[in-house]
Structures are given as C-alpha cells and as structure tokens.
Amino acid sequence: MQTKVELLAPAGNLEKMKIALNYGADAVYGGTSTFSLRIRSGKEFDMEAYAQGIEYAHARGKKVYSTVNSFPFNSQLKLYENHIAKIAELKPDALIVSSPGVVKIAAKIAPQIPIHLSTQANVMNAMDAEVYYDLGVKRIIVAREISLKDCEAIKNHIPDLELEIFVHGSMCFAYSGRCLISSLQTGRVPNRGSCANDCRFPYEIYAHNPESGTTFRLDEEEGIGTYIMNAKDMNMASHVDEILKSGVIDSLKIEGRTKSPYYAGVVTKAYRHAIDDHYLGDFDETRYQRELHTTQNRGFSDAYLLSRPFDRNNTQSNEFSMQYGTHQVVGLVLEDGLSWKCKDKTCVGDTVEIVLPMGATVDLIENDVGKIEKIADSYWLTFKKMRSTKGKEFECIHSGDLNDILLPTALPAYTILRREIAEALEKKGLTESSTPMHQKQDKK
Image (tube, rainbow, N blue to C red; front, side, top):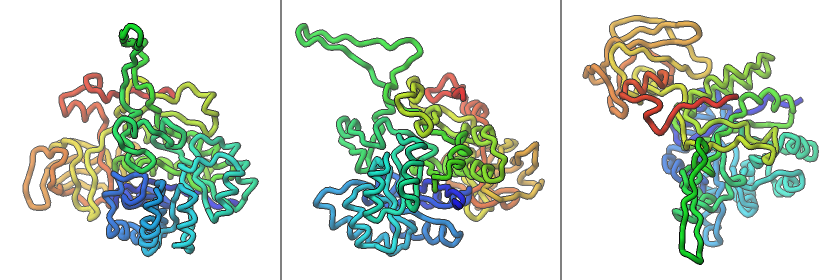
C-alpha cells in the first residue's frame, strides 16, 4: 500500500523555508548559492542560516532536500566534493543533483544521504531511470514534459524508485531548463543557476533582405502580443485527485525558490488542502484554484502531464509577462506573533483578511489597537491604531517601512494579511488597466 504522498515546497531563504513548513509542506528544498541552479536565491542562505533551517525542519518532523544541481566543469570537481562534504555535515534528508558525475561524487562523499535526481537530467523513460537507479539514485524528479502514463511505466519497471513531479510554478521555455537564450543575450548561464529569464521579454520580429540591405519590422496580429517565448505557469491543482489515484507518484513539488513569502505560504497551503481532501474523499478543485489565483502569475496551464506537448496550443502567455492575482499581500506577522511588517500601504480604519498557517486558530477580540472578527469562512482584522513596538504611532504605514507594528492580539507566526487587488491599486491611485501588470483571469 502506497504511503501518503509528500508535499514538497520551495525554500529560497530561511524565512520562506519556515513559512512553507508552517503552511503545510512535508519537506522543502533549497540550498546555498554554491553549485545550485538558483544562485540569486541561494545567496540568501549562508551555511549558518541553512543549518538553522534544517534544524527547524527536523524539530517539526519535516525534511530538507539540499540542491547541488548545477553542471560542473573539470576544474570544479574537487570544489563539488568539498561542498558536498560541508553540506553532509548539516544532515539534510537528500541531495538533489543533476549530473551523473555528481551522483557518483555524492555517493562517495556522503553515502549516508539519499540522492535525488534533478529534473534537469530530463528523465522521461524507464531505461534512463534504470541507469540512474543502478548508480544509487533513490528518487527521480522526472522531466516536466513527461506524461503520467510514462510515470506509471517507470514505476512498474522499478517499483522501489521514488518519483517526484512538479505540479505548480514557472514553466521553462526549453525542455527541462536546457536553454541557451540567456547565455547568448546576457552571458548568464541557465544551467549554472543564473538565468536572466529572457524568454519573459516582449520581442519585435524583423525580416532582412541581404541583397538590398532592407529591413522590415513585422507587425503583430491584433490581440496576439509579442511575448513569443513566454510560457504560462503550471497549475495542476485541479488534477491532484487524478494524479494521486494513479498510485505511482511519491512527491508533489512546487516551483518557486525566488518567489515571494506570500507565494510560499498560499500555494503550499492550497496543495496541502488538495492532498488532504483527496484522502478524505472531499476533493473540490474550486477551493484550491480560488487561492492559487490570488497570486501573481503568467496565466495558468495544466502543462503536459496529462496531455502531450504537441497536443497543446494554450501553454504560452503572449500578451503579458506577469499579471496581478486577485489579492495583494498587506503584511506578514513576525515570528514572535506580536507584530507585523508592512508590505502594502495600510492605514487606521483599514480592514484586511487574515490567512492562517495550517492548523492555526485565532481569537476573536476587540481592543484599542484593533478588532478581529469572523465573517463567513474568513477572519478579518480592522486596525484602530498603528503603533510600533517602540511606541511610535502612525496614521498610515507604507510598504518597506522597517517598524514592527503591534497587533491587537497574538497571531500565529507568519500569518499573512491581505486585501483584494482592486483595493490595493486604489490606495496607490491606480487601476488595473493603467498598469502593465494587469489582471486577466484564465478561463479554466
């Protein structure tokens, strides 16, 4: 009998790691910038902070998978050995690697730590899976272009091999990240962790006649747009029930180490509910999609797991690089639970929605600082005073302000405060149509 599927969330830094764990992740993945495919994100994790994160996770019975998933040059092989040895001392629950050579290095340097093969290795069939399994790989994070039927074939061929799939987040324009566009245009190498996301830019197309030296600009078709390489974001929440019924997937993975703390919390919680509801026989995709659509996105697609790439014509977002979600984060409650940091202009008299970590509760209260009430299925906080922990009072507090603002009562650590996007834009004197990051809901 298959054990309950794992929910694996991104951990771009210590704060986002803690948020993901508090919002329902069974495990998180991330690493320091050294030899990780997220150099920019990894810079927020030095060894000391990373060690704290592993200790935090283990104290809660959760797991941490360490990313060492870039591709080495000959001159770096010894450096990889040294890095893996240092990471091994922190006792992560697995090493995520991409290169067959690094698989061998990891098995030699840290034989006690399971090896997970990155999606960058592009495994799509049972024979390739067998090669890595024979090298000692315990889990394969399969290519994002794979089908569920192919996952079933791999599992039937190697029952002891764990399979992990991506279910949410950014989709790469190229097969499993094998892209050179960023290298060509900016010198930033995608497969070494420094992708500049060139596929997200709008492009103009020209036709040049070398005989006459004439160049013509090709105009876009009305309503089509010029984001010609911009893939929509993956969103498989509506298919979690079907995926888990297959019985061949061991872990559902959320992409997004460089995304916001709000994303880490809300997306993790939505998939936590989807998984739990599957096992309870109470699966309802509208509940999860409602929350996922609160986040910024490039439009959503259910990608390729259930439909082959050549069968799809709706996985590109041609008109825009990013759009608003339905909500804007207002603030994040600090770890002490007594105060919060502002992420969006908030004033005395404002009412914001409270989004709680998994399993958390809140007391209904009213005092001189504020009021917490429950309306329908949501909790709401109305501010009567804006007072910092140092005693300073404000009429309004603005995004980026460094003051910690007191709450009317203690809330669970990393509770999120949010409002609808229309209200947020109104406070800025903007409308959705007047900004380049505009709101367009996908038709599901």
